[in-house]
Structure formats: structure tokens, C-alpha cells
Image (cartoon, rainbow, N blue to C red; front, top):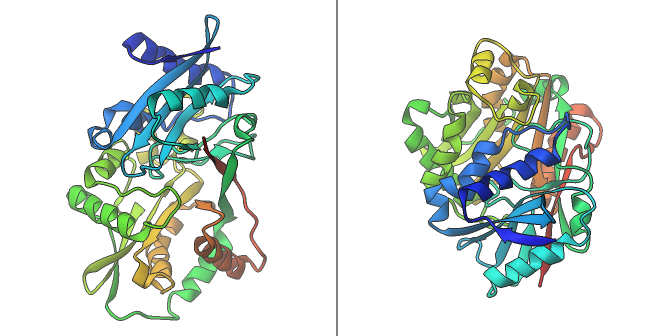
Length: 362
């Protein structure tokens, strides 16, 4: 096998076709992250301002059998990321080939992380279980053999939790009146002022997650670019802000499982948006991200955010919620989710979907 650097339009097309070939006939894969992939791998001027991206194709004779990108972000300076990896089965020790390219193009860096796609907000993780069902929108899907390609590396696991809404709704509503916090107000975003709202979201991300695994500070422009492709699918209630005396202290991001609008490798399109706006509502939503600045972590802010969104969730008739991903080493977040689910359902919740990012020093 040999590896070729993608440096022309024809190679770009082949890079894309590798993914299509891997998932041909797979009824569970969804291609709804294509717009984000394009951002990370070249279209985002804001991200490319501080990150180097190089794309590669692995050839076995005349057949393109794998692809990957190497990303080196100045804001995550210790790592080279192996991102958007796709490969056919049975390629042997493909990581050694990737390692050689890393040494050639980024010789000054000796740490590698596999499965981080530019930034946590863009996507992360290689699927470790539940290969026989479609992922929730925003979560990755890969074949069951991908993790085997990196089994000699240290795996840092991430988890999601999935639950029905009935018991949780009842418990959350009963909890809403138990405690108060002076000066606390909670509101939905205003899409008419999306630039200013995105700036608040970015600020809170940077303040809430500095010690999170693989966190790198964001720019407002990057998050604006990220929201833009989905602007016609998102409503004001999908992003909730908490403020204390007018100062933003936390946010909650959630959205319907837009993967239920498609059944193939293609990305979302205008017809999907129209179907959604005309009433085709998924039965699941994703509890995507909750971020609270350090001084209010452990307070009632988190539950206040959830309760603000709850009436909208109930009105849309969602039957299920899937929350995460959460790094299993993030003890505080894992404990928070397990605590509220145990209180809602009376039993210890089980991890639903599991992902891994793989790390080593070379």
C-alpha cells in the first residue's frame, strides 16, 4: 500500500469516494455531517487561520482503500489529529503508514489522537458498539472494525445515555420549583441577532471547558460557520442561555434528530427542511451540550436551563432523548447525568452508545 497527499481536484473527488465505497449498502450510515467535514477540511477560513490540514489517500494498487486527514491546530499544540478516517476492512497495520506521514509532515510533534475531527464542536469519536442502528444527528457512525486498526493505542472512551421522556419530564417539572438563585434568568436565543448570540455561545464554551479533554478555544466566526448550514432547521428554543444579573453564565444546546429525515449517504437538503417545517418531526432529540462557567457549576443553573427547554420538547412530542457524548473520565458530568436519570427512573442508567478516541506518543 502507498499513501498519496491530496493536492488537486481529482484527488479531492477520490478522497470523497473512499467514504462512499465504505458505506455502500450500509443502511445505518448517515451522511449528514458532510457540510461540517467540508468546513474542517478546507472551507473554513476561521479554522484554517490557526490549523494546518493535510489530506491523504491510501492506495492498494489501483484501488483507493482508505483516507484520512492530519490536522495540527495551534490551539491544541501538543497533538496531531488523525481525522475523518475511513477505510475498507482487512488493511493490516494501517496506523504505521499514518504514523510515517505524521513524522514526515509534522516531525516536531510526537503526540497523536485518532478520532478528533478538528475540534470537539465539529465531532469526535470512533464507534465501539451499536453498529446495527443509525446514529443520532451529530454523532458519528463507523463500521465495527475501525477500532481494531488502533487497538495498540490508548483508548479514551466517551458515552451517550438514551432514555424515554415520560418519567424524566415528570421529575424535571417537580424539581423546577425546589430551589432559587438570586438574579437568575433563562432565555432562548434570538436568531435575528445570531452573530451576537453566537458570540455569547463561544464565550461560554471557552469559559466552561478549559480543562476538558482536547478542548481548544474557539472564535465566534468558527461557531457562526458551524451553525450556518443548519440555520433553517434550528429554532430559538434550541439554544438556551442562563444569565445572572444580565451576565451569561451557562447555555444548553439541543436539537431534533435530523438523521431521521434521511435514509442514505446524502447530506440534508432543501426538501428535508421543507418536510421538517411541514410537520415531519423526529421522535428523538439530542441533548447535545450544556456548559456552565466554573463559579456556577454544581448550582441550579443546569436544571434551570433544562426546564426552560422542557415545554418546547413536550410540545414537539419527542419520545426519546439521547445525551452526550461525555468522556467517561469527566466524573462531574457523568455523575450529573446519572444522578438525574436515576432520580427520574429509579434505577442506575446504563451507557447506551460508546465511542473512543485513541491516543499515543510516537
